Length: 304
Image 1 (tube, rainbow, N blue to C red):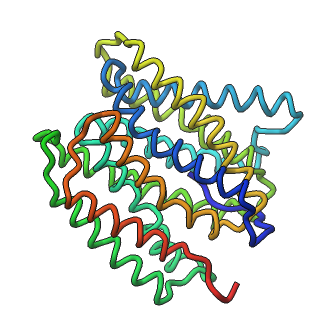
Image 2: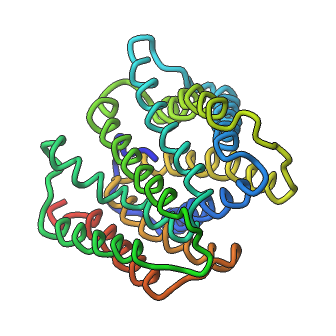
């Protein structure tokens, strides 16, 4: 989700490092939970419920802390832009996982750090590509090609539709990051307001997607699907994002994001253990290349 505002410290203590690992585990488990909820809840409807519940919980929490979450009138355009990017991202993520494996999908979604690096090179004067980033991009590209070439026993015939949606999800995520860096970071908008804008302003797009694409679909949630949806709403979109933004307030974003290579790793492992997906050798090779590329792209510069 979002990127960086007001980083202050270069050193991340052990406790916060462990919290980062927990966050990556939570994010990796999110993909698995979506596959569960998709079994008996229409996917875009589930994404809509997630944004509604998480934004309400965030509003309650902010109210208890006496923190403002609504955007100033002059900044409302940023909320709409963030909501559209975020809503499109999760519409495609939930829908795409109806077609492809979770283990494959999470690797493709994590083209995001790589797309962010490329977009930043052309749009942010102080965030250019250097040798390590270029090597990381090349490694990750080879990894993505390897993932595309993998064929597991659990992969459906229309997996290519889901693959395309997963890649587009990663690109929208990257565009979201760049938008924040370029237009939001230096405004008066706080982290709480940024998170609330993502969740709240995504609701209209997701509602339209639900009505336009899922009207008439059966809604008969099973206990496992409901539990998965609660996990997405409370653990991921509320607790997980609050934890991420809290860490962003205290530490340099480049050092935090370097942990993100753990997320697809956890996602692939959980997909095999919980969903029973077939994890081929080429999938593991692709994962390793993508994870190494993410680390190189986000590794803090020695000049910092």
